[in-house]
Amino acid sequence: MEHFDVIIVGAGISGIGAAHHLQKYCPGKSYAVLEARAEMGGTWDLFKYPGIRSDSDMFTLGYGFHPWRDAKVIADGPSIKSYVEATAKEYGIEKHIRFSTRVESMAFDSASARWTVTAKTPLGEKKLACNFLWMCSGYYRYSSGYTPDFPGAAEFKGDVIHPQLWPENYDYSGKEVVVIGSGATAVTLIPSMTDKAKHVTMLQRSPSWFFNLPQTSNIAERMSKIVGRALAFRLLRWWRIVFQQIMYAMIRARPEKAGENLLNLVREQLPASYDVERHFHPRYNPWDQRLCVVPDGDLFKAIKSGKASVETDEIDRWVEDGIRLKSGKTLKADIIITATGLHLEAMGGARANIDGREVDLGKTFTYRGFAVSDLPNLAFVFGYTNSSWTLRADLISRYVVRLLNFMDKNSYDVATPVNDDPTLKAEPFLNLSSGYIMRAVDRLPKQGDKAPWRNPQSYFRDIRELRFGRIDDGVMRFSKAAAKAAAQQQNLAVAAE
Image 1 (cartoon, rainbow, N blue to C red):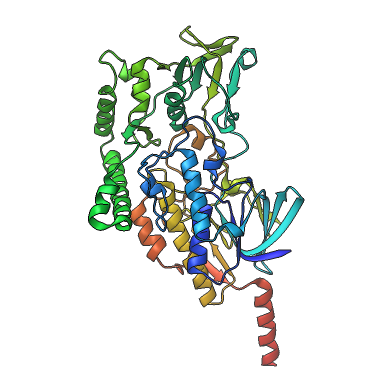
Image 2 (spheres, one colour):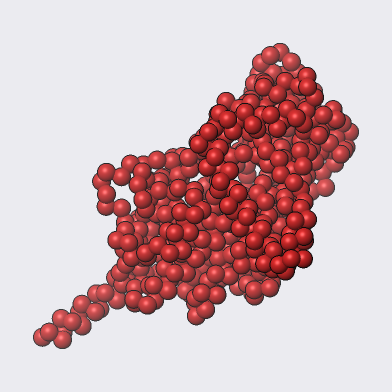
């Protein structure tokens, strides 16, 4: 069985970042990156639907160690995939990746302080061992998205597509399209499909909050002439980080005023007679769910042009030629796109056990939002919901390499977050009310009501805790492998005789 010091699971934006930090700050560690798909890129390799793009600005979604240096503020999926691939090539990470290797289970043995990973490959089942397991496998099921059971779905005669499984080279020219959903995917699809479709309708049960960002910016080029290209992109990245954190804090502090401002921005982009209140005023406050980015206002331009429209209603049932609404109206459709969300799952769906005991992740707590109570030598990456994913992925990477170096320096084999506080109260891992999150509450680890079991979603707090906070905080417990500890005790006993 092959053995590595560290196994990283996932070769997406998080996994490539983790590999860079590991080889830079722990240069003596051997490692492998296990990727379930045939190519790297993760999300940006999986999703192929029209218009696929980032929902965060690329100056912060890009790596801190390898800044994004394109004029695109909101980048298309293929550009992001190319960026991840170029990063892996530049830093020599490519040769460590094992493609088409899907991790299905992982077992920790306390005697040897090792994880054994069981993976499915084209050549059959393969087992690999490691001292530390670093899960960068994302937060949702790659094999399928979430689609509710719609009454009458079998009656519909047209095509039904979930964006996560978009058919290659699919032709929707001249078709009537109904997109069910009002989240980031729907908002991306709708303006992108108006180039060929006869008409595209966004069917929503309730609206989402939207805000505009420019698709491109030449500010970096202008700054480069003053301070140089490298410094310009780093300064721009920090400006975006600060802006995101301030904007989030201001919106949460005055949600009603923020909502009013967001609605006014929508009104400015639509005809005066448009019913903005009905179609764009959500039932919840801004940031109770993630805000949706609209690059250059493309959604509103599509609506204003008449190529797209919004229906806010509930579905009665699907019928042969479309969808009948509870209002009695029927939306004609040749194609129905179910942009109805994701299946959230922790650890890429892999099963975990400790010394033969199965772990129920739904009954665990997250330590600092990246480790799991009573799971030794394991970290997972989950980014921010109120900012760019990679900002937190980078900070988690910095913590993990500090942890590994601390263990080596002190001759520890095992690091385990232990909750021995009987008063700790369980709360959902994410403080968002989005449907895809609420459906997975029972399956995901919980956060606690006090540090270090909270997941605060605060970049500046995480800098303090993850970059500079104590490793030996009394909650993360350190020990030697059980077999090694037993041998040392036996040697001491013999010496005493």
